[in-house]
Length: 302
Image (spheres, rainbow, N blue to C red):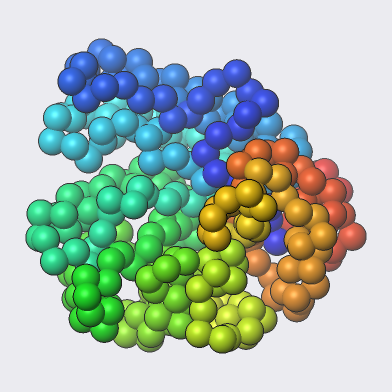
């Protein structure tokens, strides 16, 4: 069991997701921005290892505009050696990496232009992971997409598009349930047809389900992950008391998290905390896990 957080470390004076306006794109600005993002990424990884945080979600913006037609810069070749070194560090430390493309990635859209752009963006994500040599345990998670008035046809459309994807993309992909359109059970239906692993979003399942127990869904979704996929991932958050249902909390509720850990027995899961204060909640969660035999510590950190 690893604990992770997404994209930004608020204690470090840098960002690995710096962007700039599309209208100001030029190769010099692009290469400078990517260099800064990768430098910060290395700092985040080093900080995480020191604090036994061995799961991290990379921002899609680490290589800004990578899949956009405006970007003809050969970033793959330019940064290949640096990405290889970063990947070596990740593997040596036992860190798990994931990515979560933005909501505009919609494989089941009826609009073929949106699907084409989505596939291009997924190809960028897969290329980035492969340049770091991270293998099939590094995952790209995405939602099923929209219902478009017919959820079953939308599921069928997702399956048809998924089956056409390059295997280099498919080997990294997982789908997750959302809080309004496609439940974990819907995702399991897609998995049965495609073999794609299902990442259970615990908070989304609490918001939108068909009456299934959380423990049963942890079990069912976990069974969709093969040995090559690694330990099943889950997303975890809790409700912000002042926001609409589905609004993520600012800080982890340790009482709720303790209950989830008890409920998750005996399953081993890598847990991504989708909580606003990021590494602060990750540290709090780790403090709670010190006596849990499932918890994975950094090499030599006991």
